[in-house]
Length: 76
Image (tube, rainbow, N blue to C red; front, side, top):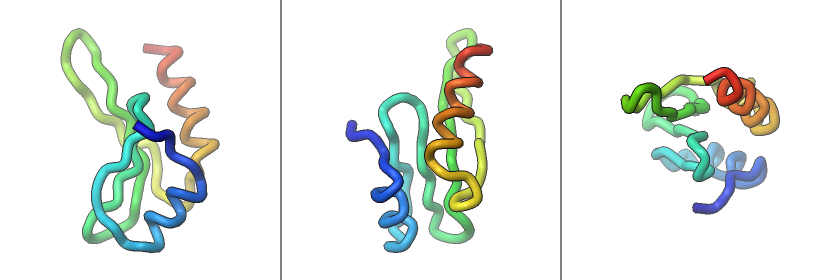
């Protein structure tokens, strides 16, 4: 799966295309039909899949989101 880029995310947000767009490493850019786009992180704990919302776009950019994801991974 292709990595997310700031340019790609901005284009997805402007196009109002809804869906989940992955970077292939558990990070998702979620664009719902209604409301604001947001960042989500999927992970597994004790064999159970979990999902954590990291923040809303554009208030939280790609670089900050990736850094936050790496901090969370370190503490799992």
